[in-house]
Image (tube, rainbow, N blue to C red):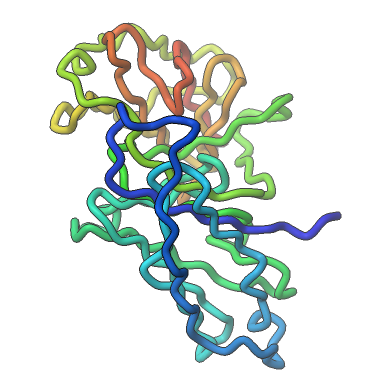
Length: 271
């Protein structure tokens, strides 16, 4: 099996109207990582920097403000900080996004903390999630946590955590228009027809940003959210699965990463 590579990308302050294939951020020197680069004796303290690829290939992306490894604890801990207005770090091509304010403080910075695994072969977020690519961005992108599978090999009530292969950071997700705040909740059908499915714990809409953002939360043992008859699945994270949808520019659809969502289902392995 090929060892995973982690990539990161940082984006700042690009308006949606300025994006184009030919646009690239101005080159800037990458901050020199700090911390020990030698291989300590502990198995979980020898993860290479190269296991995480830091990308700056997307318009608006830029270097992380800091990238530090601490080997003073039981295992090596790597902390990456993205700085900029509405900063966010996208992990593994959209599997997850860490945004400014997710830690309860809005301070124009987003922080990702990773731990070296037992074999020093990967940087991980949790014991069951390997991070292979990180992208750093400052953007107007709505945070999402989604996992797509082709084909989908899922079982209701089973938490799905495949090996992650990339992390990407994007900016200027959508132009700011008042038209994207009028999406009807009825545009998404909430299904409860499959064994193990049940009602969402919460379903809220936030109109405070540039466009309406709808958040659906599924709770339960090994909770998961199935999207569009299995096109996508959001897995359990600490007892819940969360889906964030953005109203499109015409207020005709709820979307995630540009994909129209018309059906969702919450399920868990509740006793």
